[in-house]
Amino acid sequence: MARTTDAETVMDTSQLRFQSGIITTALDDGEISALMAQEDSMWSVSKDEGVSCLRATFLFGRYQQCLDFVAATGSLAEQWDHHPDIHISYGRVVVRWWTHTASGITTNDVYMAVKTSDLALGMGADIVPGP
Image (tube, rainbow, N blue to C red; front, side, top):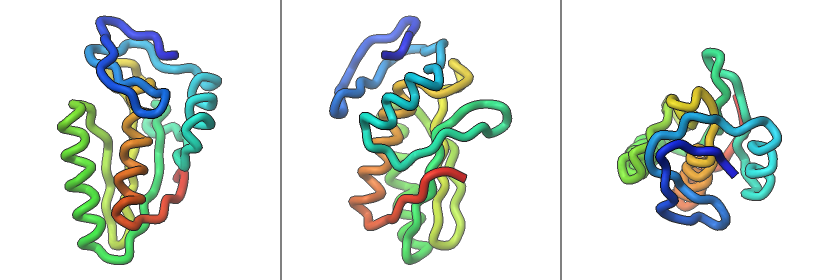
């Protein structure tokens, strides 16, 4: 389970919990692997700008579907006050989750990755892990 500072559990998704407050310690590689396996995730761990993040590419048939997905992901991010890095191009959206205050991946990122995948699948996307 994630180590947190000034954090309280506010909700469950399967067995994950989203932590409110400031999280200052990232998960280690073993913890990330275990959580990703538990969630049967299509996300991969990548290093971007020297920081570990969860990354997935979502494929859509039309550009408008990409825009709709980005808007829905933005609403989700606002709801949880946890915001991803999003890159959009024709038929493709790349999303990266990490926690700035922890300089890496936390349970919140795994939680939001699962929520993002559920959202994308509900909108008809195919998910491609990694870079």
